[in-house]
Image (cartoon, rainbow, N blue to C red; front, side, top):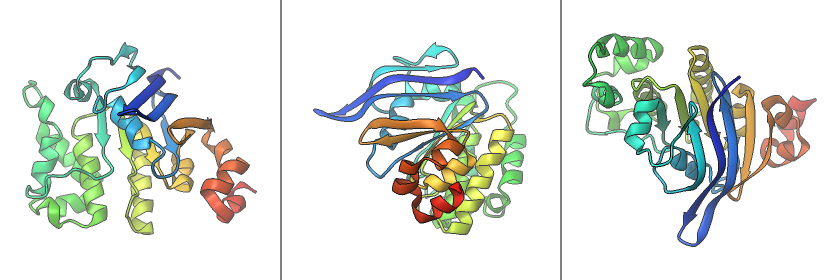
Length: 245
């Protein structure tokens, strides 16, 4: 498949400290690619650089076009959408207003029917429709993650960047979130998934990368990584050995 996103030798510095070291990866069109690794490995830094939120060296190409010099808002307009680790919702605004803000860059375009798109989001996340008038700050952790996903989808992304979508959620809610991620792939959305929950990420991904101390140290088909002894020992533990056998 053609690569929708191509990242080569991406480097990010925090002062004199290198937070990301020559990271290279590909996200083929219509696939789920995951980046797993420990806390502090540089996973969020990687997404920030791809979205233009952090200054970086190296190259990032999206749909064949070089993203160098492209501002974050313009990248959203091109079809990249980030769901950040902290959700970044507007707590004093309603659920529906948060969703509408997800389509801010499309308001001026003619023929955009936000009402029908809201209906589609509510069909995917019925709980959000039940709470459409509720303030975002009053939602549960799982509901906040659903709202963050729904808001990103209102931008009609071609590539969805997910930063730790399972963080802080109960196991049952985590299963729901990863089920939704799998369903999104079926709609044609490509996904770059950053996760500490390696087991869940590798179960839904097509391909994976392992990021440690700012550097890609392993990559391969997700099923192959799930059976890799190093990945099992470091990220999957004893339960991973059961999965791999």
